Length: 339
Image 1 (spheres, helix red, strand yellow):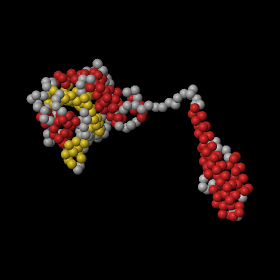
Image 2: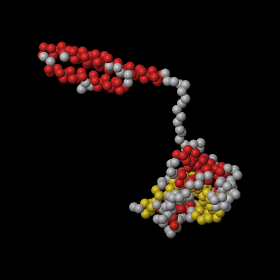
Image 3: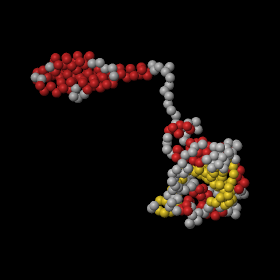
Image 4: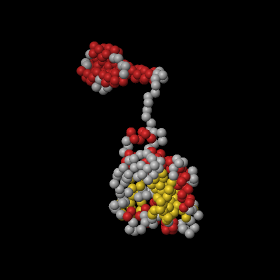
């Protein structure tokens, strides 16, 4: 048995540890419970009684030696790793890493807010799941209006008076209910309409709506505000025009057109060869809407407007397919890394 102890001691002394894998091998062979040294303790019962004390002392000494060696190997490996880090080659070129980019819709939203904040507008937000009052009734939608039909709006089945909002005008109602004029606010957000997805339409998209209420607000104020926006967003040479239209919550109402950013007014398939592209709707807030929100229409007037963020982004960057904004194609998004 003493020869076995000497044999293990020689193996222990000569065992080379240069890596973490070597260190684990050393531990399994000499330190672990089922190691060769652990097996020697199991042989204790086979040693004659008169030799058992001496045998036990020698095995314990071997065990202590193995543990000391193991700790020395740990420290040596740690020092080697520290030395490697300290003497890193600082002349090597850095590893190139790609940077993320702001989504084009987010960039357009930020630009919207930046333009209107400069002329006194703040930003308001509201819930995407709305009740009938805030989404329709307070905004002067009649009982039989098409927007109230299932084919146009995503209603919550358990409660027919609850739906995914169809516009961010619902946020404006909440602002008018909780604040007193003067009110000058933007309502950006995601909206939902039951439409087939195509290059020009989607069932989920984003709007930016604006509201200004005060004493003596006129249609001229609306026009000048939108002229300012168009030139800031698209450039000083951009032309703007208003066409009479109808919306339940504004009277009078007007569609907003800008000169086509693709052909610059010469005519192309994007503008259907008219030289003009619609960007949104606008008008003077209907007195019924003001009254529904406890604002006296005899004292206050206001204007409102709404635009699709996707539509503005498409025109600004000459993108011809709305679906690209939600497909998360890295090749597409990388083009906007400088936004």
